[in-house]
Image 1 (cartoon, rainbow, N blue to C red):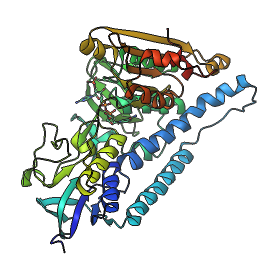
Image 2 (tube, rainbow, N blue to C red; image 1 turned 90 degrees about the vertical axis):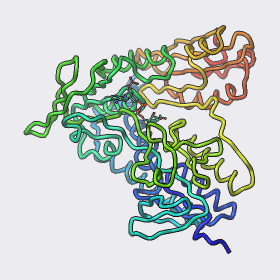
Image 3 (cartoon, protein in one colour; image 1 turned 120 degrees about the vertical axis):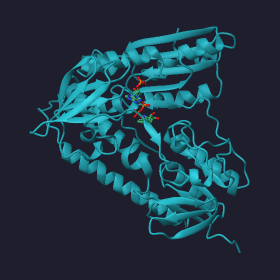
Image 4 (tube, rainbow, N blue to C red; image 1 turned 45 degrees about the vertical axis):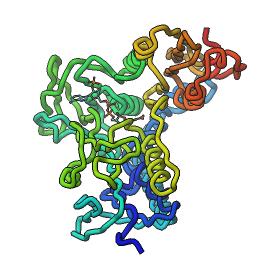
Length: 448
Ligand code: NDP
């Protein structure tokens, strides 16, 4: 009989925490998980899932317009934000239920409470109850980072954006990363006047430059405004409830909503970690080794709280690897090379492997291939929007080391192509594959 209440206590029931709990339990561990918000975490409750549903909803604006060219009589359509918002939130609630069900099916004990670490093998719930566990896993994710400036309390973050009471006629979005570009596309399609404001002159740092430039150009053609090198000075709230954003190097901008999307920080504040000796980095992320173990033996961490790659599928892999290694007798580590990623902008981006700049720096001699084309659907629709596919090849080995795409369905196509990049296939392997015609993806095997 164990002297501990549980074999594993997980703090945080998001993507990483739920996977680790359920797999550890299936390996026979007695598992408890504490969640202070809602089961499902950022991805399911206020991230990837509701965002993607809004992206789908937003895309109808273009599809309905284009449908006329394809012979459909489409009356003037009106968009109802309240209906989409409520449907999306209902879907989130349904998924939350399924996540809870998964935990229950695996006999994981769920505490709907905040938990803090009060010893190397002890946690304390918000009501003061202490629980002992042989091992503790921190999977508390991240939280939106809001820079300090006067009036920042009038802004919202991605936590609140899914709950807006009404569609803002004018929205200012701070930041030039994933969330800024995704929500710029969403609100622009819904008819809001969108202005992206960034502190630098770069969007989507880390993505290939040509692909970023293409998104910028298409976004501007669609009517999204960009202000660069313009840090926020303040937000002023007027008597009618509207806002004015004051910026450095730029005229003030009037808005009905301001969305701050300036990155996310690891959620470690007030968890008691430092008190038990868990080392954090300068951003507050838990430092872990390859086995996801922190500086304190028996305390582990997975997902965004460790700030390795802030993506849901990575957190899931880390949770799985942790549970298999510690409770399944199958030591597993996560391979962080060639992790594909996507930006669900309008149009979306998909990428895997090295950018051209990274490849030049690390490999020296490379070849690049691009296809700059208008998707067949866009041609008939009269939509002057060009897709761009780019392949980076190691000149010494012919190996494809990077694929970067912007265009309709780019993430769907990229996911399949990422298998080839991960497998280390060569440009000759791509060329040897017969094209699937007519498709956009065939461009990948026809690059000259
Ligand atoms: P990102 O890291 O993508 O971008 C942050 C942006 O904010 C950058 O443009 C950066 O500017 C700017 N910024 C950073 N710090 C400051 C500051 N102190 N003051 C002003 N501006 C600042 O963050 P997001 O918030 O968009 O997204 C957070 C994370 O969530 C992403 O990194 C990603 O991992 C994940 N995510 C993934 C999605 C997906 O997979 N599709 C979708 C949404 C989120 P600059 O770089 O120019 O310095």
